[in-house]
Image 1: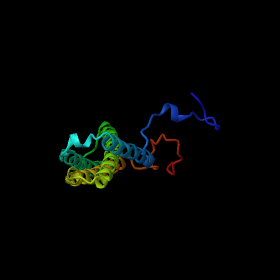
Image 2: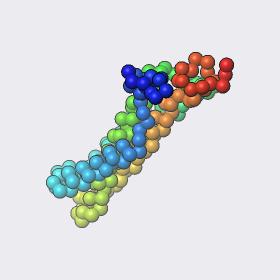
Image 3: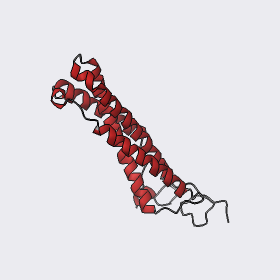
Image 4: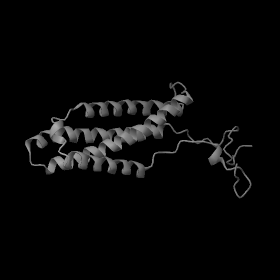
Length: 177
């Protein structure tokens, strides 16, 4: 185990933790999705084999966004111990945080893919392309909604700071003695 310059142990290697989703990771996932949507469907003429595009993707993304919004509101109240809210299991919070991270990345990939496809559809002068624009635009909106609720759920899973606890072993100085 390595040590910090002041002699204390380096907790990064021994204390695993889940880091918040970074905006750069979401932007990168969206750019990769957009490139795939543009290149895969646009240049391979694969689009004409897939039409008409189904609405199921948008419906599933909206359903996930609603479910994660409910989880975010419920989990936040339970973690903050609001009156009437039952306590929350720590393992459930870890699972919700993992779900939120995965959902935000899937939402970013889907939003990017839908945006790339939407740009291609707008520039394509065919009736097939024009008929699929509402489906792709709705999928894009649903993916952005999923990203928002997933980030809200991830934020709701954070444990609030309580520096006044006696059993706080974080190494931070406490005002209580």
